[in-house]
Image 1 (cartoon, rainbow, N blue to C red):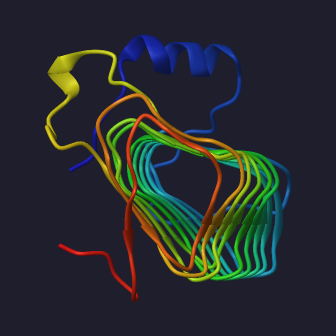
Image 2 (tube, helix red, strand yellow):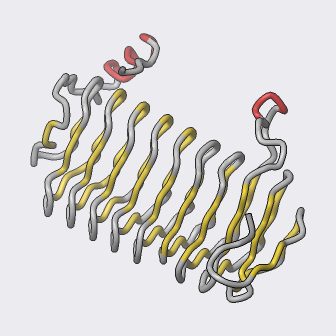
Image 3 (cartoon, one colour):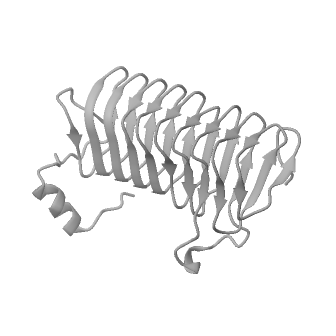
Amino acid sequence: MKRFVPIAMLALLFAAGCVNASNDEDADAPANGATHSVNGSIRVPAGAQRGDVSTVNGSIRVDDAATVSAAHTVNGDIRVGAHATVESLKTVNGSITLGAGSRVNEAITSVNGSLTLRDDSQVTGSVSNVNGSIALTAAHVAGGLQTVNGDISLRGNSHIEGGILVRKPASRWFDWETSGPRIVIGPGASVDGNLHFEREVRLYVSDQAKVGPITGTTPIRFSGENPPG
């Protein structure tokens, strides 16, 4: 079931002249510049080049080897195919997934949604959310990771520059997990910069991982592929 944003927000979007309303599900983005929708999903075909792609209530799919200036939605997931290139990715309520070998030249942001970066994907900016897991498999992030309530898993030879920050919740009302997020830095992974935790977390660091200075918690070292528990 679709979720809708307030009328006031839609009014602002129309006033700015930036919305082309569409009710098509998974409609292909046309070749002439930007594509904007209110209620509908958008697909960028494989190998295509497009400008900004955005919707309010709908998902965005960027197929393999496509190039997009930016992909933004409010209520919907964003999926980027293998070897695709996007300037930035942003959603409020939805997950973001990067395919193998894809590239994001700026930041990846979600408020409520998981973030998944697959083999050899590259992000020049930061990767951040509030609620939702962050999982990297042999991926590279140059601008650091940030979350409030999300678990973090770094697998393979994932490489983080700019450290990891787990922020304190703005209100105890949002702090559902009394034990805090679970952070796993697996064998072969590396984190350059500070690992700073403003709230309680469970931090597991492989004896084959490389990490920077840790503040706010005491790491639990482990051997093998997976931490205890």
